[in-house]
Image (tube, rainbow, N blue to C red; front, side):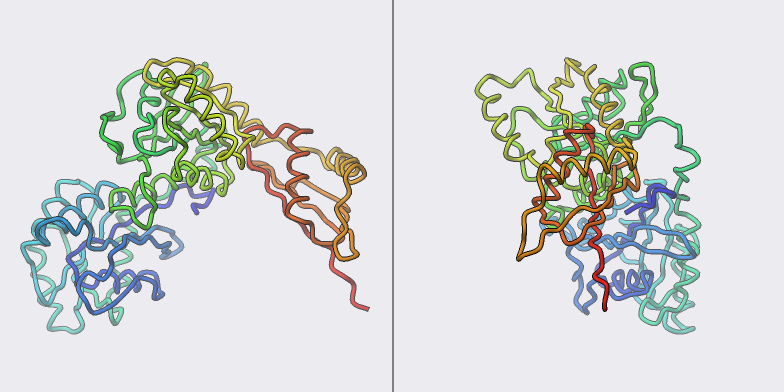
Length: 444
């Protein structure tokens, strides 16, 4: 999770042929054994992302495996992997086996890395002694600048390599100073092809995001400052999410990584759903990610011009079944393509942000809790009846409450308290966090 003070954490992709020691090097960077390491070429099948830290700076390391097994040759497969990695990471760590030297596959990757214009750090791995160190310098010929000789296995040179990585990774922007009082941050999230980019284009009033009818054409998130309702907003557009993260191909894996980052960076998320299609498992998963990150939420049903009476009937049933966890989120129906009802978005976002930042005084909260417990006491469990003794709201964004009780509360009773809090105080468009602290029994 990105820290609220430092904003989004930069992403470093580790690229290279199978068996050059990428995973061993990732473990060395992490200082712990997490990436799968085995002496068989291409063991890292999945892209795996890890949180890393060096000299007090956090970054995400993405270990790239053998993607797209249908690609004809190994070189093509590595080239495809490099293309995806460089398009979505902030910098690339290119690992070459110094004992083997430069292969054709390495040359292919170099072309892509050069074309990307993104920073590249070159690691000459398997340099275990002075003799191999001389061989490592032959890698200057790749034209990627200085090769950093390392031994992923023994840790030689890894400190210098990490210093070089930090030097090229962007500094995380300090969100607190810069963005306090700045434009509110809105993430547009949803599956591919539900119309996220069309919506952003309509809001921005010009074609700024590539829109094509191929699912998932938006790759990079594009931050847009947009004037709406006389105010400036910062919209974070995200690449769509198609499959479960575990099954996703490299492209979609990064898309999910970016979407999670966009959710973390935002204050409110607009989940775009296709009104014509049934609510899918991915939609529910994105909803969960938004809820767990504690962001405000608005749900926009797009392509409403294509929704007929029969579909509306079924959609109402789906909303009752699949969106039961987020009944508090404002829902709007829009058609991004034509701009129909898009003016409803800002009032819905405002309402959600207002709920997200609502604070109740301790006095008002405790008189409400007193009434609630008197009307509807906690059920008796094995001869005991836990009571709510005192409550306080410890923070907003999202509203977070601590309840001091005489015993553990049932999950059902916690849900009841949340429901009544919403009825009494609104909290539209925001998750509510309730932490229960049962009073410790005094030991005699």
